[in-house]
Image 1 (cartoon, rainbow, N blue to C red):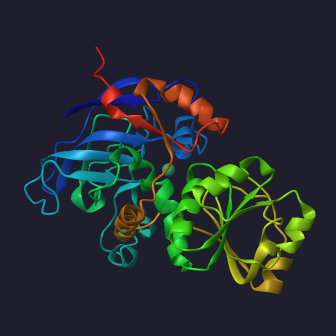
Image 2 (image 1 turned 135 degrees about the vertical axis):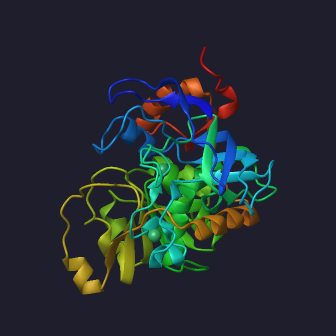
Image 3 (image 1 turned 60 degrees about the vertical axis):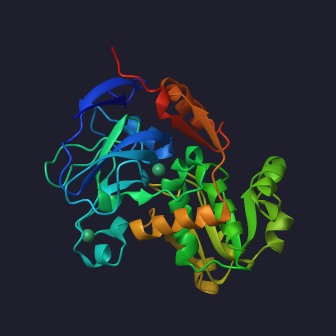
Length: 350
Ligand SMILES: [Zn+2]
Ligand SMILES: [Zn+2]
C-alpha cells in the first residue's frame, strides 16, 4: 500500500517529504492510521547516522499512536477503530526463552526495530512513525486505554517504557528512594512514574535551575551534583538511580550515592562511558546496570498504569514540517519535555 511521511536521505540533510510503499497486510497484521508520533533522541541520532548503521532513506519514529483502519484475516485482538500504540519494536522470533517470557526486547535473535531494521520475512527495511500509516503484527500493538488523553500517549511508548521497566525490575514501590539524573524526555517520565509508584524521588542536577520543574513533575527534592557538601550528605541514600543522560559522562559522582545493593541503571547513553572507579561498587556491593525499553506485556501494563494514575508526559505539539527545527531544539535540550507530531498535519506530497 502507498504511504507517505518524512525521511532523512543523508546524515547532513534535513528531513523531507517522502512517499513509499508499506507492505500489504499479512493475516496477523493490523493497519494503523498514525495520529501522533513522538520525537525521541534516537530519531535524531539515527537520522544523523551517529551509530553508523543508518540505512537511507530513513523514516524515523518509534513512539506511535493511531487508529486501526484494517485488520488481517487472522487478527483477533483488535478491530477497526481501536486506538493502538506501537513502540520501538515491531517483531521478534516469538519462540526463544526471552520472547516466551514476554521479554521480546531481549529476543535471542534480536528484536526487529520499528525503523531501520530488516523485516524478518522480506528483509525490507522497516520505516517508522513519521508517516501516515503503519502495518504491524497485532502482537506488537498495545491497546491505548480509554480515558487517556491520546495526544499525550505517544512518548510513553519509548520514554515511558524505558523508565517504567527498570522501576519494575528493581521493585520500586512506596518509600523506595529513587534518584533521576537528567530531566529530559526520559528523565521527566522517570520522575512521574516513580512518584506515581509512591517512591521518594530526587532529581540530580548540576544547578538549581530545575528545582521548580522537578517539584512540578512530582519530585520530592533536587540534589545539586556540584554541591560537594550536599553530595557527601547524600552518600548511601538511594536504592535506585535512573541515569537518563544521553551522552558519554562520568559515573563516579553518582555511585557512592547508592545504598548497599543499590543499582545505577543506564537508560540514556548508548555507547562509551567514561572509565569509572570500582571502589564504591565493591565496598557497597553496588551495581551499574543497563536496561532497554521493556517487553510488550510490560508496555501494556505501563499504559494501563499511566491511565490509572493519569501519569502522562508533558508534550509540545508540532506539525510534521516543523521536525527539523524540533531536532535542533532537542539538541539544545530546549523542549519540555517531549515533542509530539500531530500527524493530521502531514499531507501527501504533490
Ligand atoms: Zn526512543
Ligand atoms: Zn525471541
